[in-house]
Image (cartoon, rainbow, N blue to C red; front, side, top):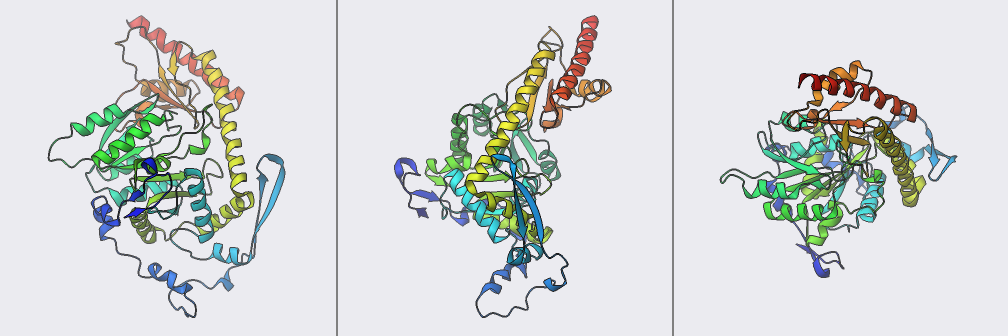
Length: 454
């Protein structure tokens, strides 16, 4: 199947859209065995003109006591201007009732157009979008749709700690692919795949966070992204692009294109499953994320949702749509630019304090997205002296009045590491300075103790 395009494929050629049958090899046994909801699968028929539906056991909206919902949002670019919003009439009726598993139509349409515009992807290229209760919910359902118990999976390492238990619950063999200051190390990825044992099924998925990686803060360079796409084609794995910090990019250079955006340049589309979140830019508590990718995979994920929790809350979706619709796409872009600049300033304050207090005691790279610093403790002049941040951070630093995360929690193997993750998203300048001053005291004492034992 091909879709004619203008300039999206190699040398402007048509883009090959992978057929639905291609994904049979990727879907898990659970996804293949899950039967469609006997009720929700028929919901679209209720929209047929002239049909009188006795299908669903929906509660009668006449019994709902909520008559309107009023919220106020700041106007993007002008914090002194507030925009009152009211959810009422048909929008309220939609918000208070069961809705489509993929999301309420108004929000799905808005987000789909956002993806088309932001990532330069035409509709009709074999992809669609589905709303989830946060991107963590989407990731969990994607994994259960794609992974069988005991499968091997490729995981960018250090990895977001929230995905490790998901893989562990399926007894996956997590193959760690190391990263450096340029992102995922494609030389290591290539070596892993080219030396894969004969007769053992290769991993079918690669998990990566390309912008402001949690925990490392790394943003993958363009060359690495293109190499990962090429390796995906050569070795047959899908790219799970988890990108909650995409809109928290504050680097000086232009924002790099996503995997989802770059994919058409290869001449073939359908190997990228993208996860977005509004948690970092709209509200964490509203729990709205969305997945974009191949239709057969989205269908399998939605089948899980229909069985597990029916749908993401219609009410929070309606509120989200009311805010986004009042802003428009230009307003959304303005808002996200303001958010990214906010975190850029937070980063600068934190790094200045690190330079004051941790110079000589730690080393780090400056993040260009996200809300984390990933730094390596330097507590000895002896390179053979192994530093384990677990004991230092969990015990000694905590007793010293400062809390951070030891790097081992971000390693699927749970191995020892000298690295530490510190979040700079919440603290004010005085608290940042005091926290790192306290950490300095702990590290100096640790360095002194090690020197005495040497």
